[in-house]
Image (cartoon, rainbow, N blue to C red):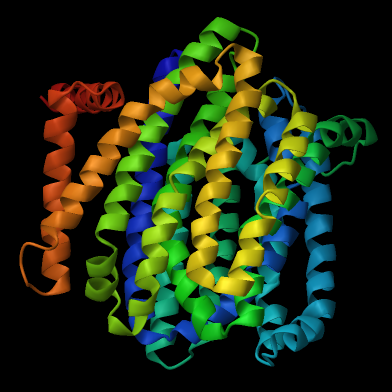
Length: 485
């Protein structure tokens, strides 16, 4: 099977994986949001930065280093496995000791027992990280899809059961525990790793030399992504943080999920052709165009339907999160673009440059934090929009120099998608104002109208990313139909 065929197959299963998981999480999330309060979501949001940083230290860029390495040995896998598990245990101990201080900082006594239980996920996840690498490296996203779907469905069912029984925030805690445990068990059942437990100093030094720079980059990323949770939780309230967390979660459901799908498949695929600049540029150019089209369409559609989305699905007690969701949806357009540009640096072995750009682009975000403290959450999100667009320009310029794809050329490639998405957003927003119907009904009308608009106009004006997606879908459908006959 050719690289293109394996990539398309991988993308298909990755999309099935993410779609099934997001659908289940979306449904479970609606039920939980109706059973729980914004303040209970806010308690989990207060801990986000601490657990994200702990997980980042555990991963430390080692998975990408193993994927990028052409022929990793059993010693490589075993060494990183031992390092991950040891790091996970260390950071669980750190979180446990920090619990009283974190609780004091936020003035929330409940955080102490929550950290003690939720911290177990850091150790549990550490056991499964290296075992996932062979599946990703071989583009076996069918197995990864099965693992994540099963673990998400069962953990979601546990959370809803606990929420109905009045466990409150603990239903969210145990959802994370069960999901991590099932995911780790299943990945070992699928992979059945045969490497023996051994530590190789040579393997560690080689992989750490590359992965450590990614670790530093990701620490800045996670600090940036979660610093807003700390600011809101400390200077506003748990309820305000819960509103922001729910809006940001719905934004991530589309933006970050799409990025994760494309990144998980494109990174190993592009890594195979990293030494052929012409081929790499052509493949990367198509990736940028398709990513922009999908992200812009989804996020502009989400912004246009935000009011009916929130009121119709999770109820009026979350109505104050509507403007947050509208603004964050526009911010979400730039997230995948920023990181697929950084991917080229990693593929080309420029992890040091990757780190420097992460530092620079995250320092640019400091004014947004200051504005939030002075003028409030909405003003902070508006500033985030400007900082993320500037981040994109910086990373596109840097990556473009490596493969002769300047930012001006990239901008010309993505401009049609931006213009189309803006027109779609206006159309969908106007559609939502035509009738005075219940929010859920209006949401369904907007979704149907938006889908029809996207297909008809994209096809009529021959928008290139749409045509490529259409071709892939038709090929898969025709192939399946032919097999069935």
